[in-house]
Amino acid sequence: MTDLTTCSKITNFIEKALLNEVETWVSQLVSGDILGYESGLFAQLRSVYNYMSDLLLGLASSRVYDGLVRSGSASGCRKMEARDLSVKIGTGHQVKVKSPYAKVVPDGWSGTRHLLAGHWHLIGGSTPSLYDKVGYCSALSPSYDVAHQTLSKFGVEMCLSSVRDLTNDVGSHCFEYGEEDLMLKPGETMAGKRVVIATDGGRTRTRLYDDTLNSAGNPTYQTPWREPKLFVIDVLDNEGRPDRHEVPIYGCRFAEDDMLGLLGRYLKKLEIDQAAHIQIVADGAPWIWNNLRPLLEELNVDPSRITETLDYYHASGYIHDLVEKMPKRIRKKEREEHLKQFKACLWEGKTNQIVEACQAIFKRPSQLVKRYINYLDKHQTRTQYADYEKNNLMCGSGIIESGVRRVINLRFKNAATFWKKEIVEKLYFLRAALLSKRWDNVIQRLANSI
Image (cartoon, rainbow, N blue to C red; front, top):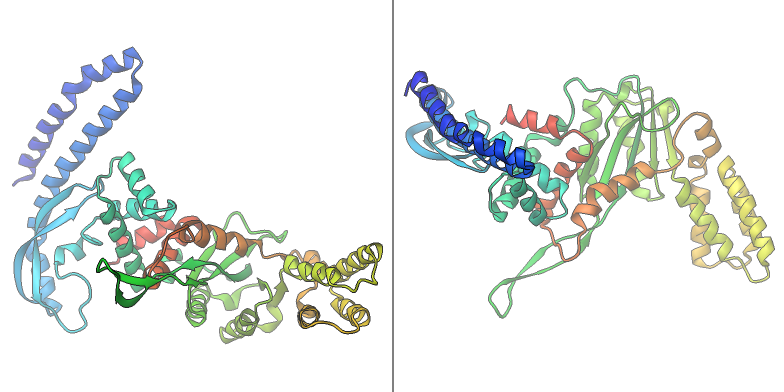
């Protein structure tokens, strides 16, 4: 088919699809039915989009066919034959085209054997326009069902299972490609910036099959809670707040080592060794303090440029607990005075004075009280809040608390929702990309690199 023939067909279709409806649309507008006008126009434009894609994708596939066969042969593919390939475009409409199919591929080959699918950067047979919309709605919505409803509302026709499967395919492609390579913008660096790194755990209920069947013959499974570990990397402005001109970076894994490995890859690409200053903010979990500073030092960060900060609200919570556990001989007014003094000492970083006072008050401390006291004693160097405020650094871990809630809990902690670990771990990335305003960057990289 020539370009002229194609243009003629498209022109004729547009005339029938649009021009014949003009009078109807004008009448609707005159009568005040603007909803009917917009719905009708959108439906007709959608039909034009589908028709043009049928023609143009078919025309283009025939023109690149021989070139794809030659490039496939050069890559070691053999026994090539023409096969039908269903391409799902941005409306959910399927277009049938001919694609070179490699029956024999070289060792180490990954991805589809349909060479045209690679040429057009398809995922699950879908174009970037479609997997952009589906992935975005699935990451944004509280469930696949709501994502499906949203897509239908805006003219994308797919069944619910296809929405779920395509989202999972996109997550798998991102995982295989390398999240840090997709999330970061070209040339993005932390050189000369004041960086804050925070990490914490969320909650997700997983689906663990136990290789047995129930009375109906269906596989049974356990639903244990797991703690995915999320980190955030952000930039501080001169007042110690997240810089509104920067966008955060989130990463999430279940295993501690996997999360630290991902964090390390991000930090290396961001040239963290050239940052002006790095602040680590977290609660009292030992694994955080035992790993983050050594990780930064392995990446050649000068230890003098690292500040560790215990979240103020976690620390003050221990003070409230200690005052509450004081012996009955300590009256209410005296307790209130102790609480006031302790909070002042905490802010000034003088937790040693709190420890000494508690050791005098608690003659026979319980194991719980001992744990509270040891907690404050152990983190004394991380509780210099007056100094942090003076140097425009953070005193609390709100950025990670918010991140855990938004990235993990609001999407993957729903009632009666159970996730396969290997699937949900990849979906965390899609949610993180959306909420960090990096989604378009991820799609651009996918659409040009598969």
